[in-house]
Length: 422
Ligand SMILES: [Zn+2]
Image (cartoon, rainbow, N blue to C red; front, side, top):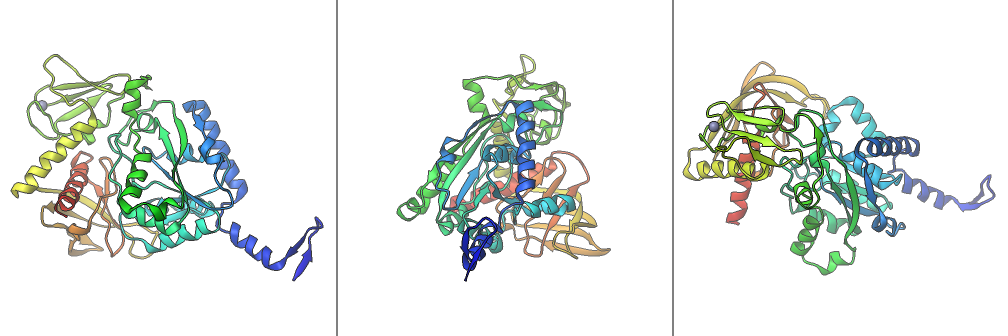
């Protein structure tokens, strides 16, 4: 059936239906334009952002595509949205953000795709595929969460399956400066310039020609950004007065007196309260000895990995155990309604991970499937989530300290040990 529109263009009714189908996954254009405009203004004035969009502009617009990006801060959506320059994209967003009612409304308006963190989530995979099939650009951070120490986190090889299923070209958006501007552990205001660039990772033809490992390597190499590497080549000052504050929430082991949880930070200095070992963060974000007899690691990533090594030794010799008290939040009534339901102890050993406490005034013992955990989503010092088939288990720390990071590190170590045996 044909119809004359008011602009005098004859269109087929069927085409109109198709056209509707094509655009129904896209964000409201006015909201998106406003969001992009605000992101660009904010980044221009605050971060003097520089873009390189050449590769993305040349993409085949008759097809959808996937854009993967490195994830260094919660502000990344501003960096990426501004980089996309008014092109409407479908972001894949972790469900954690949907617990906030206002944010959920916004994410729904911009047709973000909710995804469970570190759990198999067939519905989100289906939605991603549907979006690229209707010529959308889908943006996803394959790491699933922000880097805690500046280096790329573990990326689950399941990303290869997703990419192969979508059968579209894959681009990477590399964001530089995000970690130094907003490290996950930071407490005080700081600022650093941001740069972004698009690179092509895979043509859809590559997905049939390359094996899974080759695809995986191309993906991880394309988003392996570490701000410290660039900072060594072209040092740039970080603006801020308390650059090291908050680092003690991830760096809790003193290599001088071998004590745990004894660091306190103030300004640009972090000091062990037991032995006086002091560490300074310089204006470029590098660690330096505070005094001549300080014992430190070269950077927070090496330090963090050494802490993981200590946990690994305890796991291997069978002495590993951590426990702490938490408030528990669950989504029992509705998927996106997170409510405080109880309080108790969370215990992690090399063989078991369980919660002994209350849920709605009943005493419970809840075991988690330790061997299937890949990573724990978390906020530094305050929160860990345990991916579980029964729904969300969010644990809020009752002691704002580095214990939270020990659970995160231990689950990472256990995954690494499992993979090394395979
Ligand atoms: Zn010490």
